[in-house]
Length: 475
Image 1: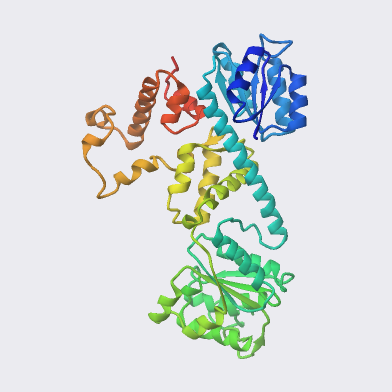
Image 2: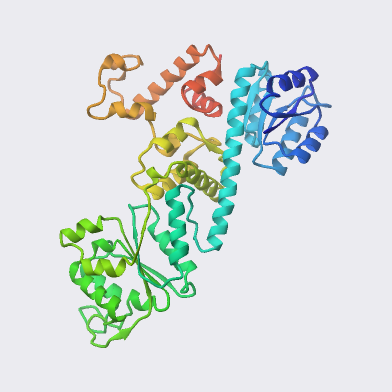
């Protein structure tokens, strides 16, 4: 069973919590800091509930905060939920700033506390899984996977293909949408292959003008064209003994495809403006996001070149088809950028996780990485919310805002009438709507912050941040 440590000087509260939670968790009880640390060190519980008023300072918070500091120093990933009285709001916030997961004001409502605990254990489990997967990813990097990550069946097939083909010196074609990680896979193939001690040279065929691409690939002789003042080696020669990665090869002009085909067949090149055949020994890995078969049908891509570069083909799945990989990747990026920017981010809110799962991700892994990086920079909380990721509307309602959706004004929420927004900018209107929704949620929940936060699909700390932002105060 999942282990829960309850630290409270009140025998009645310890008894109440053990009775109410004993069926769901293995409950450990402590009434002092020393006893709590002893149990924590021995059992390493994932979640701790901590009363700040512990002996000998039962009327203050020094012992509780000291206990929190020791726990987080020993295991920073522990989810500590601080239990405090309503009059001790400042110390509860201080505990959250120190790294506590959440706080809850006494007297306790067992149903509410169970919800908080359930989420804490869920996040602890997810973070533990991410650490395990990150460790596996680090090991994969040592083995030559260069940080590729995924647990879905499609990615497992990709890993198996990399392992099989890396040591076989044949051309490889990687197919996949933009942002799926084609260059990362190419680097993994190089790192695991027999040419790993050679150079990995990459060139994007779609980013270089057609008039310059031939010189970029094969080099040029002095005087070959205006401005060619010296002999210059091309990327193909730089990749001698290593791997040449031709990204977006589907964008290559037909005339240049002929010259590339000659090199693949004869293993020799001629620099622009030169006549000397130069032998080059390099492995070719190519990639494209276009439908290569359709390009062959329309005459944009040579069929004989396709057969040369596509001896082995690896298909990368789009992120939207990778299921649980989305959230796992998001958490890995969250951890990476949190460390990079020195921010204590611990996870995603319910709304943010919903967006992660339901968004179409047209930019694939690259877009996910950029959104999480933005979120870590923008968030002012330890929990990343949907707005931090750049999402403003809930996924459940965004479809109705599209052309052809339900436009019946009677179905819209009553947020003050259309005239109350006249003359406002979109940003000002959104601010006002947020304020109205916050007030309505508090009224419907009769001041219960946990229920109000649940209704708006945000965490309690985020809800408090929103109250402060909009100048609202809990009654």
